[in-house]
Image (tube, rainbow, N blue to C red):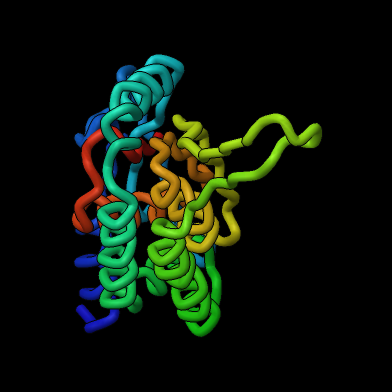
Length: 215
């Protein structure tokens, strides 16, 4: 076995294949799975849990249950989670790049560029989490004072396309985390592996159970 083949096998072994619901990776309620193929060879890379309506409801229920407590987490703490996620993605840049190349056929050089691009959303919004401000003003008639505050609006449903599986996930997840919103992520069936690995990284960065759910 070549080093490349060994690296690919080890990488695939680290990718969760279940649905992430309330902090746990679980099979679909129906038990169904679908195959993710290497478009260059047609080889099956992994079989992933195939969510149905029951799983979608469970994911939404988990996000709704976690919303109140997550919204109360201080912005600084939310920012630190995103910063840790940025560092973890950067540390595993080669893993993410190789995984994207395997599941979608993007040239490795371009995949590495996407990792850099996608990780920057995590770093940017880690800094923006503490800069969510309101507004204080005088009413148009001059009789009252207007105080505007911003609050999380989650749970959020996030749907990502196949062609930028990491960057479009970080672009949606990072601002939701910064704002204090819980999420349900639906990744593209053609390229779900990158999202699966990224969700595992978010959990490793300290994201509480139920904040991010992936189906």
